[in-house]
Length: 416
Image (cartoon, rainbow, N blue to C red; front, side, top):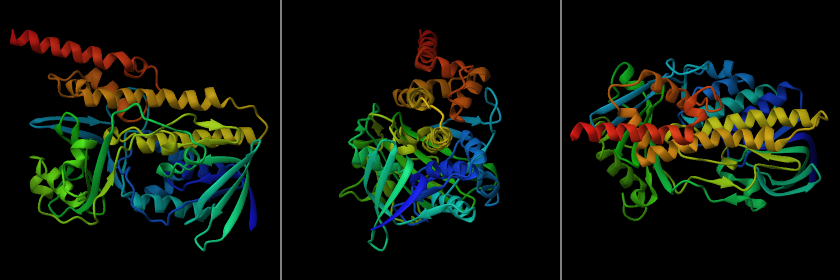
């Protein structure tokens, strides 16, 4: 059995592991990424939010990614019957990026890893982690290569960015139930031959079919569009017989008055993929010699596209702290990493919960619009959930409920 030695081993080559790798490589740290799958591969998480652009830039990846001309995402549209609410990222509270991308993740992740390899980062694809043993802060990770051989990689520090593979949570019994109600999703891509010209054809939309059920539409610059349905798991399961995901998604599209003509008669480019009870959590985010990032720690819900943002936020932060630790600094992983990440997760958790109660939808569709409120909510949707100058961040646990209650009272007074 062969042995390799590195400073930092990163498990997973998705956006979280990749931004960590990009940052550490810039700092001349000896790193290696092991990735279970072969790229390109189809995964969910195709709608980014502006905060991620800070991370790609800091990791030295933005300039190359920008040459691929992925579809620009300038905001997001939420449709509920005849009601439409559009958020423009250039009209948000505070500083930050005004745009991001809508990406086919197969192409996007491949572009990122190609760039990392061009920079000299060692990425070993189709290699599965089967055991991790820690001796103090030093780890010995056993992997099975695509040829079937076993190899040990020794590292001074380990970053688990394995996403839904959840390597360390699985091996170390760190999984914990999510605080969110069980939801599931089904999605595919469609060659968007009926795409309208102009902004209508490029705008990401969330079409609310019921309070807890919505359809996503994410147009890409390659002419394809991602279409998915999200809802309580029981609802999603009832869309078809015998777990037929094609039938289920066809039935979901038929429920959308807004999109039935655009997509109803078109074939799917691949058999729709189903994600069941996708929300996850962990008992701890770090330990002696390791840290977990991205979906290997928490995944909330796709409604506000927060998944990749938390992946890259945690990936870049983990890399910075690991760099400091490798250089002899004392790092307080609880306050500098876990507490920080939990603050942002808590904000988005509130927004996800209040979306599904209907309270946040009350704020979205209230007329006349309150520009000040909308700008502050927009900043949250853009991913700037650590900016406590924004009262919709600082008082997230109260402000949405309180405002929805006031709107409801106003409606009741009008009907009296």
